[in-house]
Length: 416
Image 1 (cartoon, rainbow, N blue to C red):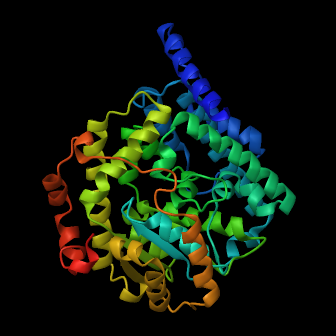
Image 2 (image 1 turned 120 degrees about the vertical axis):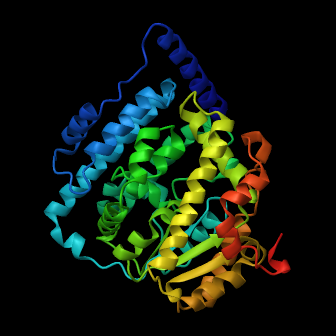
Image 3 (image 1 turned 180 degrees about the vertical axis):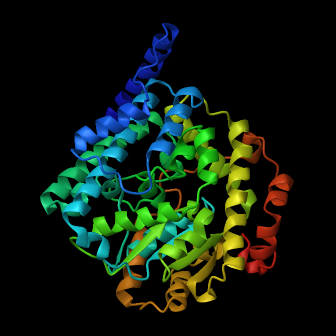
């Protein structure tokens, strides 16, 4: 009943927005100057730290106004989200100014899961996070990082409930999204939500059509984003340091060299799967997210866009691995089909490669997670290349170097 009410409310708001636009009204204004001023007033702080949020915020607001074609709930959500990110960015800087020792904390041998989206990265991240010695940033913690870092257990629980209630509205905005990617307050979250606080994140181009911002981001060194990423984790852990962070984002492919410059002892796990099995799923995810917030979600525009972006990501990662002399001991490659066929056997290999202690308790926790999270638990995700104007031959050509390196030489037993 409540689900139908949320969906009806969102649909009605979209229709109301069409009517407002007919009369020349678009809803809340997306002004970078106003957002910066509002965040400073809410946080009672005006020192942003690095990197400077002003240039990317200006581009984002320009794109969201001119190109994204946001509907009314999308415009409200975009303004709310940007203001939340800016406010928390300032509050974290204020906490660090009051407690300088926060940035002197160590982060030892963090594990990063990377690879194309839809290649098992989420499943692998969750399994690694089920080890009691590991900690993943949870969704509610990345949405409310100040409370997560300093609150008490009762406040944490209350905040988690509030975040869970907020996330229910995503079902109203994107009713089929849960079939593609599970969303919940207590689930591990991707690092792109962390770097969104620095306004250096691929979160924005996945959710909205933001061409100027995306062009700007592609020209930036990722170093500042990873320096902020470390600062965010140090703040999140300063009251309760973990034994080891486990982190994940496909977008780490774009900045592997910079990631290892900031985290030189990082353990990198890269997942691999045929791009022809991945691209229509990824295009479907992008369409669903953009449809949740805007009228601009043309499938045949998004299909080629995701191929271009993620073929560049893999080229960047290959270049980093080949030319920055990343030691082999720092990276472990995982074939998607081998992993999904025997998850615990693959995890044991990962632990052995990075000299991590594999314990019976670890195996039991991971087995329990697999039992509670069967494939297609929320329904089967249907998608075809042709739905997005894509062809297998063209995809294979874009990913030719990657396929030759990681896929063409696989034994037959590794192929589905």
